[in-house]
Length: 444
Ligand code: 5GP
Ligand code: SF4
Ligand code: MG
Image 1: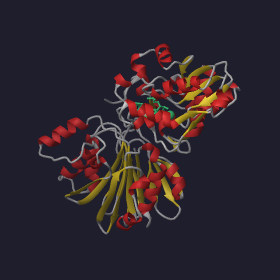
Image 2: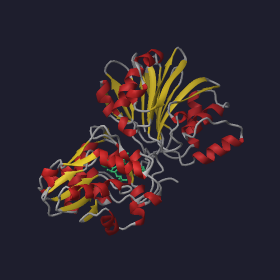
Image 3: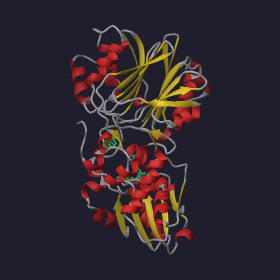
Image 4: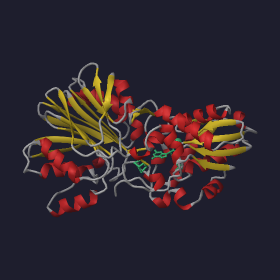
């Protein structure tokens, strides 16, 4: 998912819209915006892409100089319209609306507890728990105190933005699993967004990342920072591998630069004697460029991508996923005929894409196809906001590398090591989560 919040700009909801558009890759199922105007919060949300949901009329409703927005990629709950965000509520102190990127690991316990005490839920989202925890805490007088109490009861990944009548709050969990950055808008006010690519689009300057465990309060035109948790950074390494957009800077580094360096490390660790380096577009392009530069093997776009097909991984059934991969990727036959190819992708999840690609390239006359993956084998699910399937569906959880190579019909297959990734990011391993690759889950 992606989240955005704009504070102190008369075009707040419009700027949220543009930001969400630039972060569409983080979730394509649903989107929504809430804005606060004259102590009332209005929300427009629906299923579909950002450009399909909002019309000019909506921005006449979404007035005010404060707004928050969300694009949804279902990790918890299902994909009904009820499960679109922002989640809005009227409670003891007025109205609030909330957007959340991440996944709570104790959502079920909290919901059972709240339901026992009479709470009624309207959605399947773990995010709704947070709003309940805030609303029911009538012992505390201020919203801020209530929010702090609430987030201390939840566990897991949360980059949160909360909008009230006159304030906005941005919070990152102590592990900082998901990114969240702060910027200053040139035409006035502040922006908080999952990815800095949004800043570029709305004319904002990057100030800094919100720290793991930090809460920023936007109030009376000012921003105030406080640490509400002891930070214990475990930032998601998969943001670099696949999730974030290459032009964004996440966790202090540019994603494209890191990805390209991963490709270089891949070439050092796992060289192949081949004629051509071919990326699986788009997610494999940066790593393939790095691989080509490091190995000296020429880079060619041997596979074309049809951009009218969205991210295929999100499709619910295997049949549709297979068909969509076919619709999405096709070979440039003249380029690859008779050639020995190194094909670079960012990751293998179920094996659908790789299998289809190898077959397609062989049918197009490739002499050899060597798959090189710019991440370690994905052996476990993510509980922190990336929608990897169950362990059983992950091909690397039940097959060895040799077996996968055979299954996808590649001449060889190899994955980048965790050490290779560390060398590429040039940072301390302990600051990052690698759980879906090494099974060390920071919180369960
Ligand atoms: P597979 O076909 O093996 O199931 O999935 C691998 C492909 O899906 C890769 O090309 C990779 O770029 C993409 N991918 C990997 N993880 C994710 C994810 O969490 N979400 C989406 N949308 N795509 C993913
Ligand atoms: Fe990221 Fe994987 Fe950790 Fe999930 S388990 S937060 S995808 S590194
Ligand atoms: Mg891909």
